[in-house]
Structure formats: structure tokens, C-alpha cells
Length: 394
Ligand code: DNO
Image 1 (cartoon, rainbow, N blue to C red):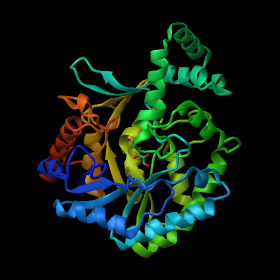
Image 2: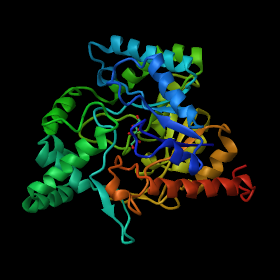
Image 3: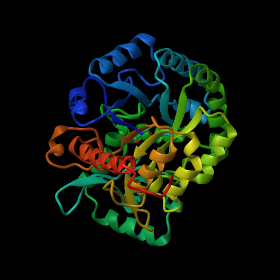
């Protein structure tokens, strides 16, 4: 595996020089300044690529080239947007950047209710609490049909929460779910929006009447349109699994389990239609056996995110250390080192906040010390495998 790092561009507080010191080989980034849906020009791509190369690194992966909502729900401007997407891919291909991560999640790119959930040792991590999420959609969004998604016992907990909920608590949930997690990855929402709840509700409304089958068909349609440019340049498209990997907000979600992944891989059976193997996202669904999925899909995995979660039957999950939780990162490293393409890009995903990360204003999940610590753990696992200290999985 190639050791990569998600870097947010020239304004990232974590510089490329810092990354070289900790053994990073490749960069995962995007043209964050370009508005979603606009074409990525060859000049802009080359400018960033050269900047990265001048620091002695390479631009290994685009994360993400966002797929506009209208392509997902099949809006009237989808042809035009697909055309623009193809031009961006053409420009990336010309520039020699051949791994592109995207997602096909309606409206919301990833979900957590708490971005600083404390551990007893003084660190903190990202957390998803199902009751708080239910509170958000029932009492803050007032989403029609939301109550039907929960059991009577869950609704009783949500209603009890409502008795004591303060404005501050409500505001914090809006910040965490809509603004902070989405703000830096998802062009739908920006930190400047003055009525994020209304904006969010308007976005949800776009999916009225769109079920899983329609979304699947739209994904297939889109993939078929972009495969020729991917074939031309050897570009691997890697869809990111839904995070978390279950249905939410009454939206259709179609990359949640082995059966879903099998579906889209078979629907467009081209090696350039592949998967970002996000071990952490998949591990948050108790239905997913993450090591088994790595084995099943390895031929179509073109990008790997390593992290892990601890999930409970009541639907909560918390991000674990990279040495713990249910993803089994050690097993994955062993398996991928022996069975994936030698240079498949891998980045450690989300780290804890620790040792002063708290005051730096890093994007949620993307701390420096926490991720460096995780990378060191994974690096150690890779060294063990490369030294031949594991006999299984060969
Ligand atoms: C969150 C990330 C996602 C991911 C996108 C890919 O931390 O894993 O935002 O980058 O879903 O399109």
C-alpha cells in the first residue's frame, strides 16, 4: 500500500513539509476552491500538482470530485452536469491523476452527532448517538415520517430528551450534523449559511419519491456515461461507502453492505468502476463483516481508508483506535499488503483529538497528532507484514 494523507490544500494548517517528516508518500486532496459542479481546469490541476511535487510528494488521489445532487436524483440539468464531470476527468487524466474518490449519498456526506466525545484518557473522538440523531430529525427538522423510523422504546428516550433539551444543545446538534461535518466536504452546505436547517430541509425535499431502485439506476446511468473517459486515461473511480452504512432521514442509501457493493460492481462490470474501501464506515454497521468484504472485493478496491469503530446494538457507534474496534485494521493491513495491488493508495482516516489538536481548528476528524499516531500504528503493522512476521493470508 502507498501511505497517503488527506490534505486540504495550500491553506491547510498541516503543511506538506510536516507530512514528509512523518513518512507520507502520496497526497489525497481536491480543488477545494472550485464550486461544486464547475469544471476542474487542466491549469488549476497542474498548479496544485506541481505545488505538491515541489515538496517531494505526489498527488495520488482526488477526494472528492463531488457528484451533484441532480445527477443523483436525476434532475433536469443532469446531462449538462455529467458533461462537466467528464471534462474534469479528462483534465485529471491528462495531468496523470488516476484515482478519484466520490460518493453517491443523497444530501448528507457523513453523519456524527458529537465531534468531541471524551475518552477517560483525555483524548476525544467522533461519535454517533442514535437517540440524539432521532431528536434532531423529529424535534429540530420536524421531518414528516421521522417517528416511524424508530421503535417505541427509542421514541420514549427521544421524548424524554425533549423535556430537558436546551437551546444550546439543539444548536450544537445543528452545528455538528449539518454545518461542521458537511461544511468542508460537501458543497451543499457552507459555514456561512444563515438558515442551515431550512437549507437542509429543502435538500431533503429533492428526494421525495426517489427510492433505492431509482437511485441505483441513476448511479448506473452515470457510471456508464463516465466509463469511456476512465477507459481512455486509466482512471479508477472509487465510490465511498455510505457513512454510516444504514438508512437515514428517509433518504435512499445504496452503498451500505456487501449486497449493495456487489450490485453496483456487477451493474457496470468495468474494472474502473471500483470501491473506496472505507473500513471505518463499513464497520459501523453490525451487518458488515469488514475483513470478509475486503476479501470479496479486493480486485475492485482502488483506494483504502483505514479506521475502525465500536458499534452497539442500539445503533450508536464511536470511532475506536486503529488497533481496536470491529474493523480489524491489523487483519486488513495483512490482507491488503499480501493481496492488493502493491501501490494501492491507503490513508488513515479520522484520528482522535489529542495533545493539543483541540485548539487548532482542524476539520472534524482530521486532527494532526491523532492521525499521525494512527499512521504510525498502521506503519508498524505494515513493517511487520513486510518482514514476513505473519504467515496467514498469503
Ligand atoms: C469524511 C469523509 C467523506 C468522504 C466523502 C467522499 O470524513 O470520509 O467526506 O471524503 O464521502 O466523497
